[in-house]
Length: 152
Image (cartoon, rainbow, N blue to C red; front, side, top):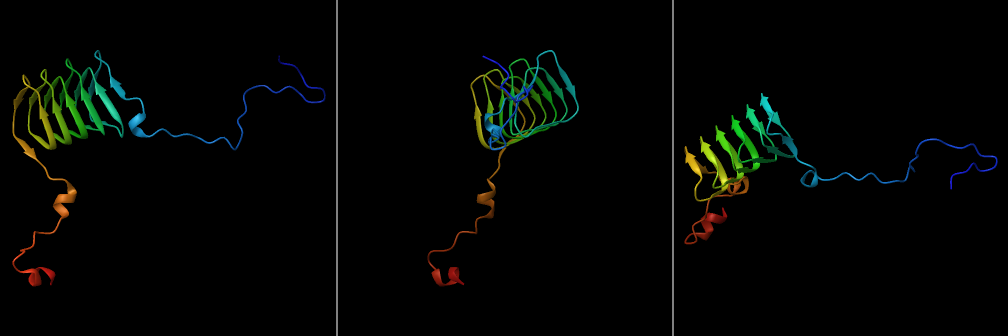
């Protein structure tokens, strides 16, 4: 199976062809970072990907996607694209999409575009819908009765 070719020395180790393409997986398909149930993080947490918290985070969290497990705790401000809370949060959430499951305990304000609260979730604080950047940049509505003025 493996033998030395006449006139050529045997090579050790693997080689890779220069023309081999390198595949970079997008963030959405990457493995999430996990804060285990027996772990406590003191300080701010940042990631460009997905983070699952099963333990405790004492500090601000800025990630793309955050999942807080049923027995997990986060104390601090959360900034993310998507947040799913099954455990305890004390602090503000700023996210495009926020889901509070039936086991969630949320104490603090929530700024969101999309909000889902399941029956049984404990919520305390102010909830504000934020408008997407596209809506904020849209021009004021024109008056259809005066099209000439609107065109100027």
